[in-house]
Length: 396
Image 1 (cartoon, helix red, strand yellow):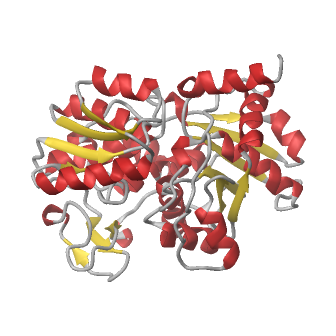
Image 2 (spheres, one colour):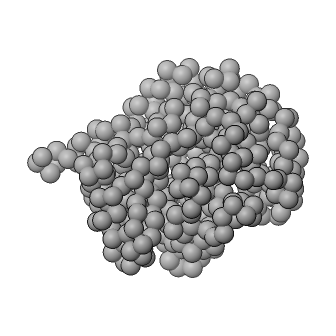
Image 3 (cartoon, one colour):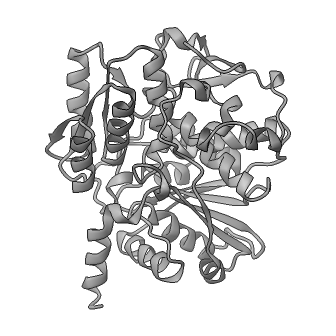
């Protein structure tokens, strides 16, 4: 396995054992905990100029990633724009508002960052087939990166996933099993199948140790695009929480390296129809309780049983942020607001960040001089039919 100089292995977030990455492709072999890439930060001598001189896209942060660009499975993901949103800033009464527009990635969502890293790891393990269960976008991304790497892919996806996701998985040559029901049903089918195929390499959320590692680069880019100034708040549409965990890790790394001196407050935004993280945070729990009857238009964050909730809740607490839930009607309206006031095409799921920020502003969580960043995790075109249907329902 070819890795970067500072990468030392995979640390279990539960039992804290450090493992050799070449020997451990998935969860902790001792306790089943989530593994997290670890680095020797003392061995790094980095400045802001370091990153401008490294690789393309997210790979310019190579020194803080497990794998060098020379072995990367990449479609030039990352380097997405940070779009200023002055009309939203005025509406919310904050100093500056930005939208980190991940819809500009190769397959239209931030899932490309995670799959670039996960499929690179699979290639380093000489995998021939990758597999995952997904609500939709991660499956499209996985099939694309598998095609790029010359691998087969096996995707388990619920019936409610969008036509675009299903179509493009096929177009990329991936094998797709459409499962009646929701993400939990797709996950159960995946579990059964991968038990029968131990040769498959999992790129499923928090089974592979690398998807949050790819997504942490969203925070690196944001800080760099703000001239190495931290935003005060980051609002993230939260289902499995991979990106939120990754960005919080990135913020702690930048502080550890002396490139910044604080942490941005991380906010988990969910739909009221499926809000296990909000419920756990508000009750002061260390871990969520599964949401019994999920019901939201936001399929991408309809994750009733997020396996990494302790990591998500830790990130919210450590950063001084929190969690917020809004009804689907407000989420759909927020997608229209962003499109009509700022011109940015936000996916429905992603718009939970906007409606969540609106609620947080009303509750006084933001200051008048604060800088707030919203994560638009996917392109609005992925949900164009849903957003337009909401528009038509208003008689417009």
